Length: 420
Image 1 (cartoon, helix red, strand yellow):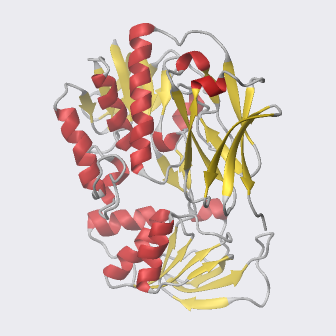
Image 2 (cartoon, one colour):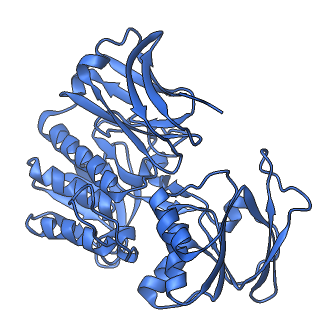
Image 3 (cartoon, one colour):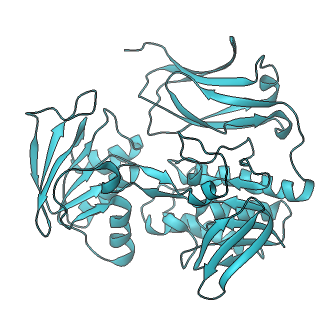
């Protein structure tokens, strides 16, 4: 029996496996469906990775390479080209590969690191014909950066997520004309630095509160009609703009890849679309952990690594010491303008000194305070100059503070200084 099986060899899986090794586990196996480790980082050839984790700017492959180099100094086993089909509550992992056929592997603990996938045209139901030339931004990124194919010459991007913004710059550098980036929300879904470096620096217009209302073309995209939307996100008649283009890139959100999680019967959070987790990233099944984009979509891979190292250390502690000691458990709730929190539950016996809470806001807020309360008691307040949905927030809650909570629920909310 293995000590630990890590499902997924992307940035989350690499960090979790390495940290579990550092914490004393010696029989660790990473299962990865691709033919190489690194996950999505392999196609992210732009820099900007590693500023928090390594204190320097790295490309995606360089960032993955750092963790792969660290793993080479261990005897962590890796099985590439291996598709995991099922994870059971008894921590049996069903997988299949060309080399080993169908296997049922048993482990004392499991960490789920399957990452996320992109929403497609079908998921958002864009009207119009169905010609060639419509790609998700990540698919186009792989074609251009890894396969060497140019996906189009006149490009319109729907959605302002980070991958879409980065592909606006990438396509421009490859010689394409990016006509516009169109976003249905009144704010961008990407990092501010990407809006500046990928759109503003290349004079690519960003149309907020706009969406595609028609796609025209026979064998290939020929024209796209874009219209302004009202507060109800419905197109406003008479505001249509036409763009002659041959390619549409969709950057309309990411969905955690949680089919295995749901099959295992693990409780899910409807807001994150990921597993409900405790302070150490343990799911509702003792000994089964989840981390990275399979729990909630991150904006920076550095934060994925930090969260995954927490899961790896917790898996090692579970194998060596058993389940977390029983005790008082607090449930985190979302208040005004907060979309979700991770973790969703905090066991006070599982905290040494502090617990890190990650969340996203629902709208752009100016100067604000992040208010942590329990019942009518305010436990803490954290000032922020600005908050945006595209940028994840983090607060550290001390154990001594949480022990003072009068109720078994803790609420995270936003109080804006001068709301509009």
